[in-house]
Length: 227
Image (cartoon, rainbow, N blue to C red; front, top):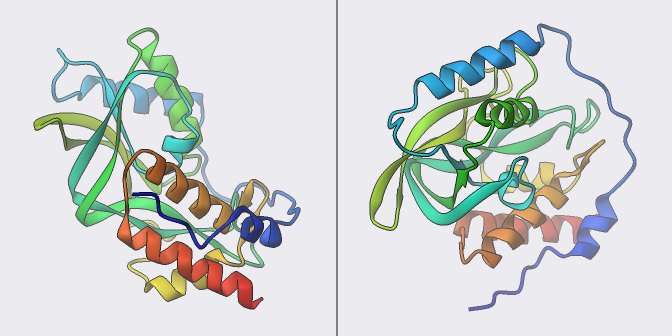
């Protein structure tokens, strides 16, 4: 079934604006040694070391993968759900108009893509991936192993999940409140509306329909139309 999104490229273009990068927030940052230690911890704690490393993608890693993969499959993560619960004043938000990014939060379930990573230079691949996913301490988007189901089989997968202890954790917000933010927030890499459009459209292309995100894209389109 082909669904017509309410949120369109025209909506995205309407809210796009050039925003200067405000830079990283004051505080401790991860350095080379810190990233290397996280890579070591993740690889050494692989629940099934005889299996390849698999990555569970639920958002931007589906439409903008950081590292290559050799195979992919649809997968279900139970006990986790997509949520716009990560506050940001950089990237797709600004100090004037803080944004919201999607994270994997506890509860519910989430359909996404399971990527099997190349075995060659896994430490280097993960190092690059981690540098994309987190920069400051404490980490808001925590790397950890979760269990997913793909093809009727339970498999361990690396995922990035929300650190609820972070001061950037927004909690569970009503869809209308999230839409209010995404319709206006924009940072130096783009807008919240663009992020939502890319995520929903690529999920649909993979045959994954997220009813919550589908409602949200409609709400964001309505708010942009009313600007």
